[in-house]
Length: 302
Image (cartoon, rainbow, N blue to C red; front, side, top):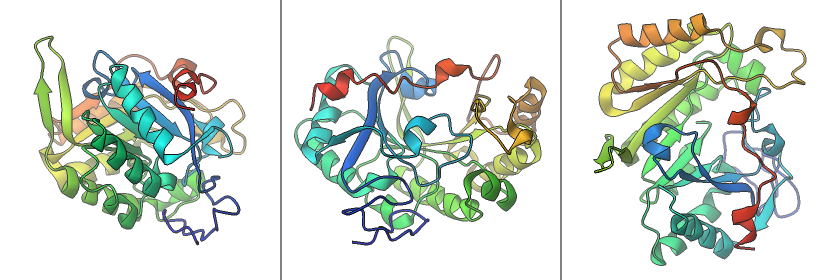
């Protein structure tokens, strides 16, 4: 069967080899954990039940999860084991099930979610993606996903092509976000007695400010503000951390300055953006990168 799940349309037979994403047909999971580094309304006090899938259709040159994004690394799970993993994370107290880079395994994930929901999975499902999605794949998630957490990385073709090899990124990501908003609707939160305000439904679009690309960031923020207003939340991120072996891209071989980040945040304020998350302090350290050697929850379902 030729794989056409993502916009790459690589048409690889993943039953026999690997696609552009670096993965075969079998589901591969690199890490499962209670993750505290998402937006507050996603992580809460107990942590988001993140399932990091191996491989990635986008494969940005600066990816902080590049240890797993290039494919071929992780534990192979059956659909039944993936379903059991979702239930295990719920039993451990996860605020939600957070599917990180799921695109290349969308059909199997949909099947596993149906199985686990029939077996008692009740926490919200988060679809955490680069935004580089086909509408057909997203529609497999309709009715299964409660919260969409996509990136909108670029507005312009030039950085999208240079850093992700995807000059058509905005074309696909903007259509994908529209579909996510159609499915999830306006943001819905639950206020708890302990003061936590947790998202139950809706869309949070993430944008990570990159060094030297303030103008492109402003275009992203303006597009989201003009198109969706208060129907989504925007998460403006300052955690760009260049990998130590990033060669050939000197313009992004540094962290974002505080001034660059403030320019983007100030621009969002000037547009009247109210539904937003911003980060305080300096840009991300290595501690923001998960430990992909930790397999404690994976081992419980294998």
